[in-house]
Image (cartoon, rainbow over all chains, first blue to last red; front, side, top):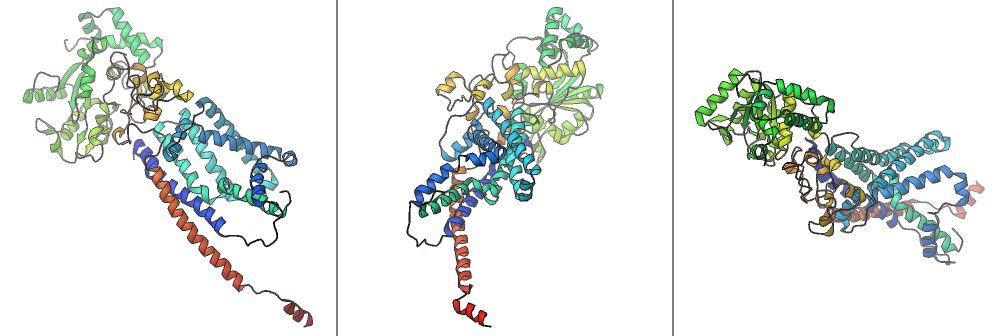
Length: 219
Length: 364
């Protein structure tokens, strides 16, 4: 297989398979959660479940002062790499084209030096959280294989993208293909690992807020 | 030019001044990214170089490579140097034809055995030799025979270097490249459709002065194929700023913004177009407003649409997503039904502890 054939294979059939697994996987996981259902709450409502649910989605996204004091490092690095991932994935021109292909809508891109710097900061933050996970006895005790796998498949697209962009490892067609391949690995594992928090977190936050709201207490 | 003349002598006879000759040597040094200190070395080597015998074989090709080399608008020192090599066989350019031409090739091969440079353009059909023959000799036979006594082989153009357009799917003639057939000779690939004229002469100059040039993993001289079009493109600042032409006639196109969204293959293409340019340094495809096709890369003809952005998937991603969503809903509903059934059967199996049970236990 030549370099061009490899790139075409990764952009074509493999990307199709990865997209199908990711989209179907996310929908299956969401339906599994939602269709399991909850027992009807027979107690009289003392407040709005929906309003409290929506409020909690927002309030839980802002760090609580006391929590921040206890885990300043975890929260800071966590925010840095999540925002960094958002910038790198959604505001880099070649990436926007992929979403434009899917959704037929486009948005302005950031300049490449900004995205480049963000990707470095994101990788540093990811390395920092991995080291902290390995050093901190509690985090290490709580970590399993899946946690390290999730870290790896998040880190790989960043490092391969950085190498491809800066041509640190020629040839370019192969490096771009490896980068896309690493993204496909992330897409396939996304619904079936803890990475699924990207879509389940809003459901769980809403539910946490809603049960309190129904009882008329603050969540 | 007599056989025992050096290139220096031959050029002086043709009226090239010492100044003009050194200017060419300096240009060659800078083109090959060599330090200025190498200019005298190039001049000295070229001065003393004996004219090498060159045999040029054209197989499944369009003659574009020969056109590229010979259609320079003005007479250049490169041309004269090319004139002074002994081009003993080139069936498009030579006056002789038929048996006379083939005799010249065989005589040159015999006389210069182990010393001549073999230039090949065009791919070689191997599924049926009848697809391309010269004087009744199949391309493969002629190549194998000529390669045996060659000092080195230069594969000019993407067809000879990688199979090119004849090899594009479904490859009806079973076209292969020179390096697919020959494994025991040094091969320099000079791909491009066609390659830049100064790159062809530059490679020959390098061969005359310093021997074989340093090659990349695809056998291309690093001096000319060391950088991607994208990295040397004068429109690169627009890419970095996020300014793109969306169509061929929008404001971005008129302002000369980056052509990435229009399918430019510059980021994955290694060639010297952006630096040496074409037509005596006039411009190159991107400067003329068209995205790079990636013609100096293997399989460029089968690398998807010329006008689809490099980062986008080639499949119908919207259709795939819709199908996947449908399948996901069906599978999710089925799994949820199984889960609910499982839960309700567990609820049914569950034996509730009543007050009576507890009282019985306390009594016993």
